[in-house]
Image (cartoon, rainbow over all chains, first blue to last red; front, side, top):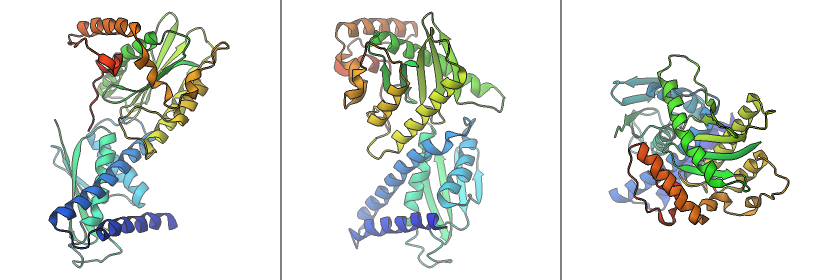
Length: 159
Length: 200
C-alpha cells in the first residue's frame, strides 16, 4: 500500500531535517527538537481529532475516547490497531504496540535504542493533540524496551 | 434558511457568529447566549441517560414567538447554534440536520487549515461563503458582510450605544446566575465578559 509508506518517508525526513540543523546537539538542543516534533504532532492530532470522529456518536466516557484512539486513530494513521491498552482506572493508560510501523524498518532488537525516542516524539504529540480536541488534557510519553515494540503512557491531567 | 448561525467553542466563547444584517443583531447574540444553557442541559442529560444512542444533533432547543433555535454539538464539544424564522414552516428536521452536517464539515475543514490556530475566531472566507448560502436571502439586503475579508466578526465590535444596552442586559442575566461582572467591557466586545477566553 503506497499510502502508508508516504507518511513513513515524510516522518523520517522530518526527524532527519530537525537533527541536521544541529549535528551535535547538547542536551538542551535535543530537547528543543523533540518538543518541536511533539508540537507538530499536537497540531496534527488536533485536526485529526476533529475530522475522524465525525460520524461516530458522542463519547460517553474517557475509556471510550481511549478505545477510539487505539482503534480508529491508530488504524487511520498506521493501518493497524494498537495491540494492548491497560489502565489503572485512575487516569493512567498504557498503550502498547508490538510492532510500531515507524520503528519496524529500523531494527528488531536492541540496536539503535538511543535513536528511537526521536521517532516517537511526533506520535506522542499526535496522541496528545487528539485527546485535547476530544476534551482531555493529558501528558503522553513513550518508551522503548526493544525495537519495534513501544509503549505510550498517557496520564490524564485533572485540574 | 437560517437567520443566525453561531459556532461556540467548548469553553463557551463564540468562534463565529453571524446573523442577517437587517435585523437587530444583539437580539440574536442574546438568543444564542441563552441557548447555551439549554445546550449544556441537554449534554448533561445525555451523559446521565443510559441509552446507547448518543446523537450529535440536539434538535429544537427552544421556540420563541418569532424564531426557533436548533443546536448541534460535536465530539470535540464545539457547539453549533442555528436560529431560523418560525414563519418558514416548510423547514423539516431533515433539512436542519443536513445544514448542521454541512456546518460540521466546513468547521472540520477550518480546523485542518494550517493557518488557523484552534481557539481563534474563524475568519475563513470559505466558511463565510458556506454560511451565506445557508442564510435567508432578503430581497432588499445585499448581505454586505460576505464581501468583508475579515468575515463578519467585526460587527459586534462596532456597536456603540447598543453595546451599553447589551452590557446592561448581560449584567442582569449574570446577576441572576449569581456571577459578578466587571461592567467595563471596553473595546473587547460585548460577549467577551461572559465568555472568558481561555487558551492552552
